[in-house]
Amino acid sequence: MARVERLGKYELLRHLASGGMARVYLARVEGVGGFTRHLVLKTMRPERTEDTSYVSMFLDEARLVATLHHQHIAQVYDIGVADDGTYYLAMEYLHGETMRHVLERARDLRQRLPLDFSLTVVAAAAAGLHHAHERRGPDGRPLGIVHRDVTPSNVIAGYDGSVKLIDFGIAKAAERSTHTKTGFIKGKAGYMAPEQALGHPVDRRADVFSLGVMLYELTTQTRAFPAASELEIAHRIVRGEVTPPSVAVAGYPTELEDVVMSALARDPDERFGDADAFGHAINYAASHLGVALGPAAVSRVIGQLFGSRPEPWLAPEVEEEDIDYSRTGDTASLLDSRPLLATTAETGAAAG
View (cartoon, helix red, strand yellow):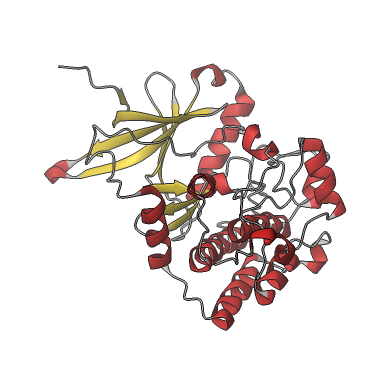
């Protein structure tokens, strides 16, 4: 009989992903009366435990996400240290695909993503972000959370139609024990707001910009800021060099273009004031266009793109594709200046 690998009370079933700071596993915990829960364990790499700054960052993320309770944010169940000194974070298992995988799959299949799917996903992510932005501590003071890493890799669409925002690992918050120095840039090229790319202080409007980039890319399936290098991407963002969606895709709805371009304004004061206003604008545009939003739109498209895929514990012989729970530093996708889908204005294809 094979030895069961455990971490504290959790049984490790499968390695899912690895990043520079952590490893992620599919795990199971059992209790009395046949209780069983499958979840994800995010563990700190052993070589990182000697670095107190990394330990502080790991614990900061755990404490931060534990304060968030929203249907569109991945839930945290537990945090602990195993007997061997391994720090771990127990989180909700999300049976779905990242928006990065969705965009890549649609490109490979040469399929357009329908508007009901794209708008549902972004509106849901906006609701989750607004919840995080509005959170207050036990003393009633705002926590000042800014995600700073809102990218297609950190939004997951479930086979059941759910939408979840993940990975607050580099989030800014007043209660963190580690803070980013002014002028030090955290985030991914292509999704950072101009002020973030310049190393200036950021607030919730930086997350609005990042989510606006995602809305642009989901609805046009082209890069918002295509370039050959991270530096050139940053320069284009800072200069506000974005091609209007209606130029990228023929027939792009004017109502939706107004929403996208407002979210992508260079000046934070000209963007939506918060993610809630952004989400309301998306819902208003959808209503005006006669597009119905909801979980059914998400589950339909995920099923069309990826087929029927049971949870890994129901079909252990099927290899689960890595889910991007931890940041992997995939600069290849960030620097790719090709369209996400080879369908642009020249083909006469409309979005949706």
